[in-house]
Amino acid sequence: MTTAPDDPFVSHRSLLFTVAYEILGSAADAEDVVQESWLRWSGADRARVRDARAYLVRIVTRQSLNRLRTLARRREDYVGEWLPEPLLTTHDVAEDVVLAESVSMAMLTVLETLGPTERAVFVLREVFDVPYDEIARAIGKPAATVRQIARRARVHVAARRPRVRVSSSEQQAVVERFLTALRTGELRELLEVMAPDVVMVIDGGGFVPAALSPVRGGRQVAELLAKVNRVALGTAAVWLNGAPAGRIDFDGEPGAVSLELADGKITRIYVVRNPRKLTRIDHPADLTR
Image (cartoon, rainbow, N blue to C red):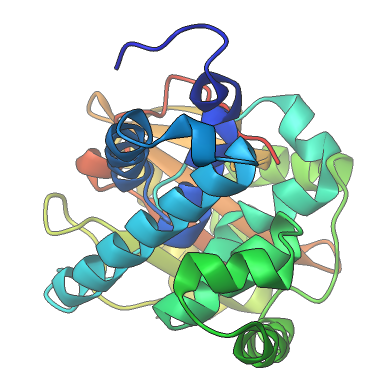
């Protein structure tokens, strides 16, 4: 992709990637969508484009929806649990509270329960504050219909999103306790940092050993995690998807761990071990609103 430094596509590229990633939950697919959008932008009559940002977001939204419908069929055949692709992020992403929450593993998992159109409308309206008439143009529906879709999506997400906002400092402290307990493999230490009804979801994609369904309950999760230090070569605290998280190396292969908290305890653990989703784990993603 070759563009002039002053091309609007260059200045909005990070935004376009972020929009695509939040609609798709996959950085690899988001990159493909950005590439496809560039091809359409390069062939557009620029003289007729009044607002380059709105025009580009519209292209990316349409391409993301097309790809999301295709991915939905593929995910029906996915081996085990499917989780969004984790992204290495910098501290400044966390400073934008709306952005950090919208790209969190917890929120992206909730967005997976929406239909493609509902997800696109929710992301554009709630995260990027796109006007209803612009969203209508992007998805090819009347503005009144878009408002109804947005209302339904907000209710749906509100019922499923984490109810308590956790500060980065609290998240960091719990992550450190969790990783320390993981290194020792002590059941008692693991149980102390987790809620009794904790749920752990592992995405191996059929490429590595992983539970094919969520593991539920403190004792069951702790017993499984206690075995990790036998095969893990190292653990480290990192920033993933706008929040403190963990990285675990298994025999030279990386794994990403994100935590969801309530009342100082871990309520959900998201573990991504699918190697195809970890190719960007060493390179910070450029996310923006």
